[in-house]
Image 1 (cartoon, helix red, strand yellow):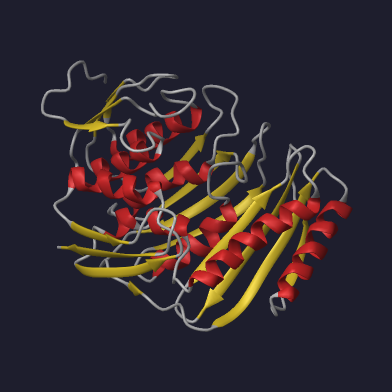
Image 2 (cartoon, rainbow, N blue to C red):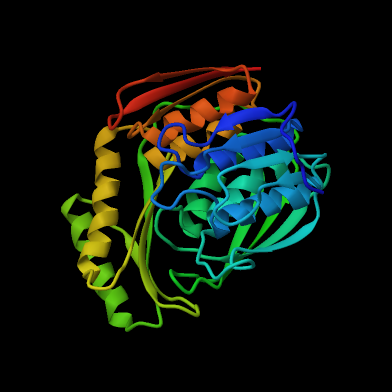
Length: 354
């Protein structure tokens, strides 16, 4: 069913802040949970090619399916969306980012839209997603598996994610499956001190390229980490995929926190640079002494605002994404969020809700 008018809808400016797809994803999640109709205009206004793209359509269609929502404007390049959800329904689902148009759009971003609502369904869910698993400008699946999900588990959220096939730009074709358990109680968290370093796990992966590239990435990673006095094991993976790509990932586990850093290969980009980028991001995080990395800080905001009580965390870098997600959740909920620190610097975030 299509919606012709946005009367009674919460109106969201999708061009706020950096004007990216994050506003859309967070708005869809909270609209679904709160059963609050939303109208989003100026979608991705801050991007070179504004409006909805295949991965954004998949986010919308996923949330529409799990809530049996009435939707208007879910078309390629549309700058306006009206979304009116019903209750959230757990179950078994399959979504393909390339369903409407060939795309390596990120499955992790689709998962961001529907994961939080599925935690609030009456029964558990199993979801299969097809698309890009390791693509630019989005969290790789390994980050979701090894950093994001372990962190929200501390709040009471339980989900598992399995990578079956890797998807690179531009071919896509990756495949992941997720299982989601409904939340019983949402706990606030305090992540101020990360504690001592427990261990480092790294992977160096290639698909349909010489394994020597992964070995060069591994060797450079080992060299750089050793210079900082860090011993690590780096697993080499010949990743199954329909496309070609390279990837280097560092997962760091501390007493009280976990963080992740990665880099993707590209045509003309040396293997050593791929490993070097991930290592340098990790070292900047180490030197900040903060508990969580900059990407995790904005991703957990929608989860924390639904908890009862106060949450506090330190982040290695305050980003525009963090402020944008804070602005978005405040359109839906009356919640106090304090950010201490400047853009681009270490900071502390306190959330008082419930």
